[in-house]
Length: 614
Image 1 (cartoon, one colour):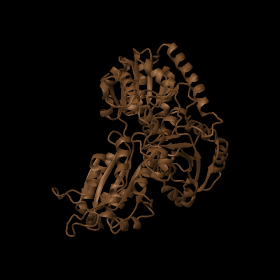
Image 2 (spheres, rainbow, N blue to C red):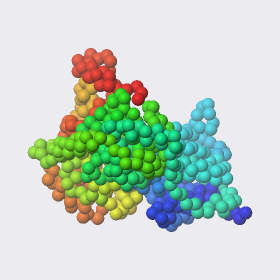
Image 3 (cartoon, rainbow, N blue to C red):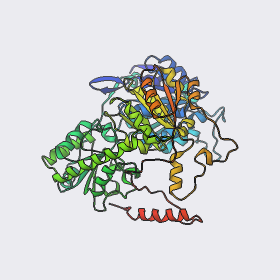
Image 4 (cartoon, one colour):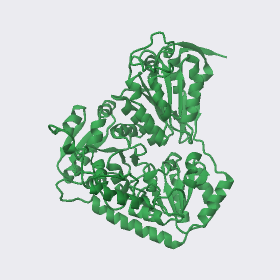
């Protein structure tokens, strides 16, 4: 067997560069590159290997480790989990900065390879700079923080260990059911140690999507439930997009006359113009989707985790409603007593379609759904229309952005009030045009996420919407986008605080406290000029005074040659009260405040509709 002597880092980089993915009949690199911020724990070993391979495995430098990992995750999501990126940092804060991003990827089932530096395997220089020392366990390092938020974790303490470790890592990263973050902690001395690696380790490998077909018994049971349904509803989750099953979903719903609703991850599976689209579902859902869900007797949930925002904390569906969970992961397919249909979304829809033949529910159900859809669209348009308010609402800003977009544009957002408003109100023009991180609700994801989306599909215009709170948490990748020539349009809605949580706080009976800047402990309120700050990072930037100026600035931004940041002041108190659904946010059982006690009564009333089990 022919062998090549390389350092562990050189071998890892060479093996990563050899991985391919099949996309549209052609082979492309599975790993689009490595995000790297170097420190003493990875610059000498892994950094040397990356430099030598910079033409076959590009290295990108960010300004914050959490942000670069967000960009990598967004790239994988926008690539429908067909391609991915790796992230490397030094030990200590560089590594732990990425743990939040690892949790995000874990919750959202998205592939990213974390390669943090680690302590010396030899322990000769212990304790090294930034080393976390456990008084009772000598094997612990800061990287053990990654264990609960990684699908697979390994620590490389000998150079030959990288072969089985990377094999296991790739199996997880490319598995539709187990997909999620992988961490290979690279001991810094081992990064530089050499080994005679078999050349077979570096042979190209092409990864194709595994499409699991449904079990005959599960398929028969699911088809029988649907054939008996009078008011069926489909819920499309992110798994539909990852399976590239949007065309199958369209044909299935049209053939069988079943309306569909979308989760945050599933939104933009099909364009919002589709006549069977009820829009978003759940806590941030449309009135049309939630009324359909509230009457449904059978729900076909495809590629969704059925988390509390989708189910209204399990108070949205009728008590006797049956759920068919079509999911590639059995853990998700068996939740809450669902009838499981463990399969790839595309394969599962094809099999269900064949089993149902020409079956359709009563025509009245489709007529009712269409009327509800039209009613909601008319209601929603009133919230997004231009107004004469001195400070616009988030919904009005969304309307202004929507009016300047093209169907191919991608809207990116994450935490705060915008996910609720955009989920209800945004009309996606094309598949993949809505990119939300709402599984982990991570403030600071937005700008870095927009960068990752742009890397995945440079031809599409990427519009990032975020609040002033998220901007202040993580804005550094504006500079990275300028540096890489990846243009974003960023709209900052400045409501001078955490407006979404302030509204939630007040709705549970508490006064406004510690959320809006005006109500936090302060001597002097900061006069933050976001436009000037963004300009200092290299962006074209400016602040607008009203919605008309915003629309003009957005149209101009389309012609700009680099990232553009537009700031507008908004009203923190207003949100779209139409649509939506109850959400389980526990209110104190005892309080001196009458408002809290009243909120507790409302909470108990809402909880009375909550099901323990289906």
